[in-house]
Image (cartoon, helix red, strand yellow):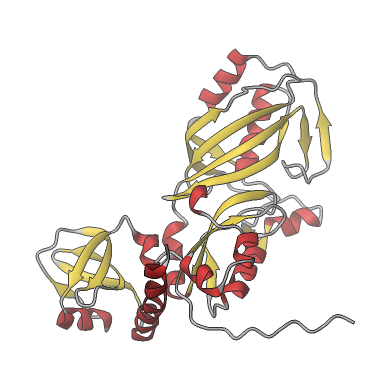
Length: 326
């Protein structure tokens, strides 16, 4: 008989954890493990990675969940191994083999295909995806053997680079790096490239190395988190405002900060701006986001006084220990 799992006492945790998601876990499974290790009350992520994929997965805790939506629009960079000659039902290594073809790919042909798929392109979302139709994920239809019509979507491939070696000796795989806009399906891109090369292809491996300004080198693994002390885990968190680091900054005095936090618009000599991070002057504290039109600072997403108090208390708990480290 299995011993009962120890009950975890949850607590308010605020910040962003950059996780290097392991192979085989869904984004939600990885989130739940990190949430349990941090004993956090509230958590979410900024967009999913397939179980097949590894790499950068920003996890948001507490007040950071209010701004996670903004990171969904961030550009992403991936490295992938494209297996040539075999097309599968899921466009990755987990699917059933549908066709096998011979491979005759020249460097000239590869360069032409890279040019063809660089820039604005149109993709048909794969059936094995979390995109919903009539309230149901496409992969649910796929598992039932049903194929439904999907609306093509326009995406942009900013960089499509063939990594060395360009094609392996046996001509069975190509290593690619892709920088793309939100909503790009790398599995579909790989499958389309395979068709353009005339041999078919599927993804053998996929790793996200960057999302927005967050890089793989900044990430921590679940294995590393598991052996850390509670303080060390908390010290891995980035501040909530790391999600809105590119926003214009407006700082308010105590009187205007209080009014803004209650949802009131403020007036000032500010130029128009769509994305604004608003702070209190003393102590310097994030209050929320806003936009500015015709000199009016208009609230969009506000932190609650309780969240602000908890964030300040969390910072005070961590800072003295950080200063004492060698």
